[in-house]
Image (cartoon, rainbow, N blue to C red):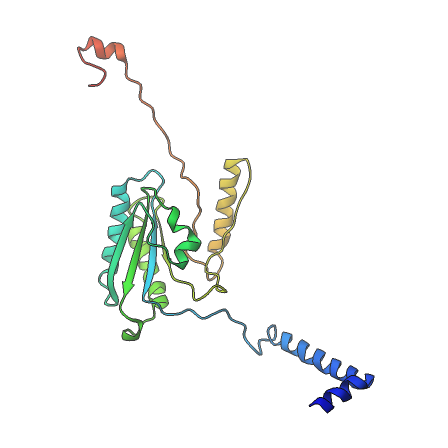
Length: 230
């Protein structure tokens, strides 16, 4: 081996030869991806023993309304043979895992937010992997429970197979005109919905509601022999 290396180093002709060979194989290796000789893939999805469901109702929803949607989801899931048990966290996030750390579960504290942790039987004891179960149940649960209250969003969250895997795409919009931002977010949301492979498209913004303020007529109340408190 040392003699071979010495021959290559000592001769400019051999140096060029080795350089061209290395360059050829480098180009060939890179060309394998666009020519699909070798398919480049991220880490494959893994079958886990748990996954999470995020529930976000309208901004002005009560805890009771959020709980009603959560119960709808739980009732739709409990008939699955592979579901061992479920944990509900209303008005707060579930105990942190890797997916929750990325998605900010620790900061959830509003009455319109809830998380459900679905615990499954051991992956070696069931035929259906967790990611296939999520794909199957997502449209069923969303069609059944998202229509209970307007602006309700239900998202199925799986644990990513590793740091190189990106399961979330985030689009940040910045500007001073709030109305323009809302219209732009609708356009972006529509484009994402038409993109194959993307699910659970969610726009993080407060819903617009009409607010009413009632001012009692103090004079009429007193003339009616009533107190303002009444």
